[in-house]
Length: 141
Image (cartoon, rainbow, N blue to C red):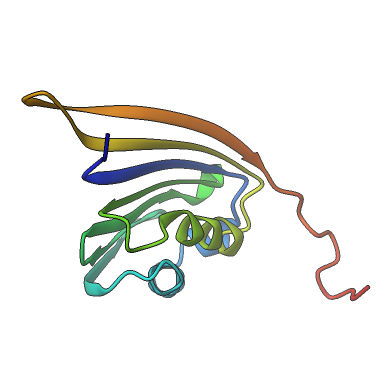
């Protein structure tokens, strides 16, 4: 059975709070992620909350990438939804997590729009990723 869309829900923990609070930097990160994921950007909108936190969305051909941040908790909620199979959402997510300096991510992939007879349903797959932070990023081996 083929899915019409793929929805990734990402809980990113241990992120760099200064990045999570910077809407300009987050916009740049998500735009780069869209490029890496071979997604065509249509429009963007980012909003900085007072005193902390950012919500942002990039509308791409086939759907969107969004982020909502809590810098005080080093946490970001990330959504990637894409229709079809011409893009690479997992590569985009990998880049975002690296750019946010996340130490952990819980990822859920929902295959949406699976036709079963005359109705549509979805299937869910979930996994965890643990990332090691380089304690000395300037040191070259």
